[in-house]
Length: 290
Image (cartoon, rainbow, N blue to C red; front, side, top):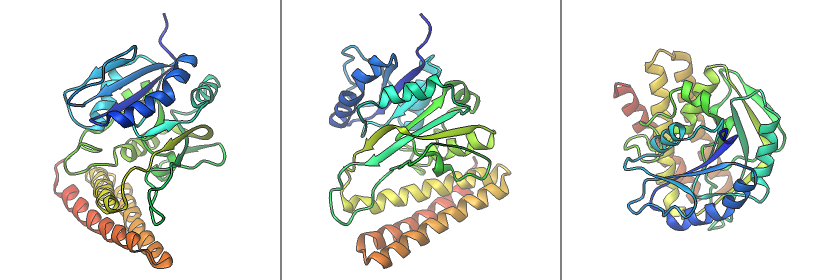
């Protein structure tokens, strides 16, 4: 039997309730589309298979889990869905139609919207609204314009050629707990590949964090972003590394301006946390031997 066109991959660690919701949203539609379904589980008590292929991974980190999936599946495309991201009905059928057209791209970036916010004054986490379909490519395309790892689809052979995801970055990494997706997107673009951004497959990213958890989350985001920027800077990509660090500074300034405009204490706390993350991430990134 030939390999499936795509494998839907869910990487998870100790979030059984969220995993159950995501599996409920995706399982039957993935099967109907002829997609493989694979769970890479780093939990202390891994999921029982129940007809689903589960890899119990003893390691730690989202980048590691993605690399495990990349080597475990032979599907042409890897469709990564976070365990707190729920594909909408029709997501798999829409994705199958996109892939059947054999797009001239190494990545497909679906629409991801926010679930209900837990508080009126809130900053949505990892959403990627897409209004029209467009092909994005070029060394100086902002890596965030290719979406986030919460819901992304990548050609497996390209991921292999790029060396997969950097396990020094991303959730589970001690000093740079994010930016694994941004680093991958950046390397994909620098290698000359294109990404198809499309509103056809649609997913919802649950907003389960409380407002009090957001400043620390964003501090980690900025620390990891600056770490990944320093990684490329120290590798000889001087213009790219400085450009990425500039993006971090603009991000801090934008959040501060938003806090002032909205008179939001939460956004002010997030802006200050981003600033701390930028400083600490840059210092660690420059000091580290990548």
